[in-house]
Image 1 (cartoon, helix red, strand yellow):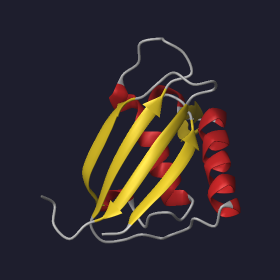
Image 2: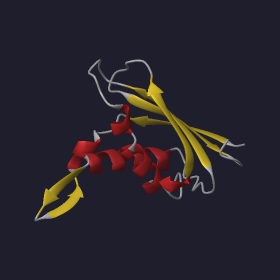
Image 3: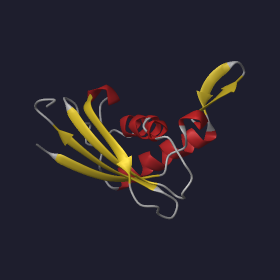
Image 4: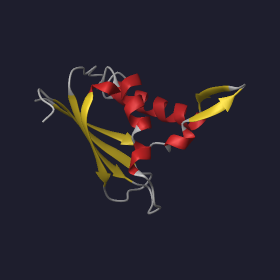
Length: 121
């Protein structure tokens, strides 16, 4: 079972990923900036693994401050960014997703571990 470790910047909230422009839903500036930051980071580190098959992911969310947040709002942006940056083929490949809170850190971050798995259980 191969394991991959990534550290990503703090993502925008799901509510801030898209905006309406000319009657169409488009990615917001915050959403584009986050995707570009992840793509640049992954490209510089040469981590375009293009993983496919069954995957398991664990995300430790290290918030930038002590405000209350919903964990489920943190999933969309990083999973989409991992797909667009070439780390994974598609976020539907994840058969197991685990997410939890870490420690408060300056500017916030996400510690991500991805495993290739044979079985779901």
